[in-house]
Image (cartoon, rainbow, N blue to C red; front, side, top):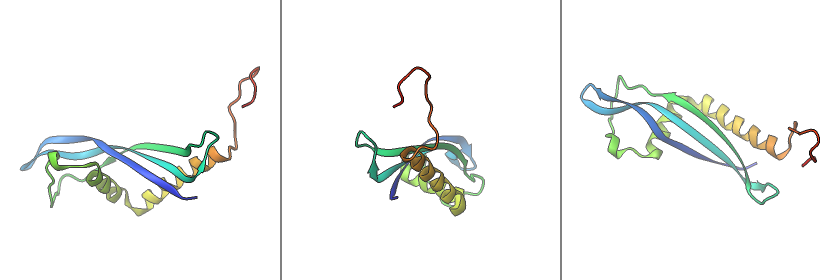
Amino acid sequence: METEYEWDCTRVDAYPLNGANTDVVYKVHWEVRAYSMHERDSKGMPFEAAIVGIEDLEASNITTFVPFNELTNEIVTEWVKIAMGVEELTTLELELTNQILELMNPTSLSLIIGQPIP
């Protein structure tokens, strides 16, 4: 299954002052959404899954400072991915894939007694 990932790393916590730098990002509240590229649900929409989390960034030893007003989602997303590391990032993508596969082929249903089965 081919999957597309969309990251939102635009909500951050920052130190107002950290050494000589101002508004230094030290924590990112992230969300990543995964979309099935070819598989569609009964309404023709791609299957979708999401995970949210928080990633702490190392702010005590900054070698290349990026001023807050120059930050973009892409820059901060890259910081988050680096902080996570390959193993955690791979686990995250696997969890999103498993969520989509569960939507495509449910192994459990939530039903209401007295209501028609969907």
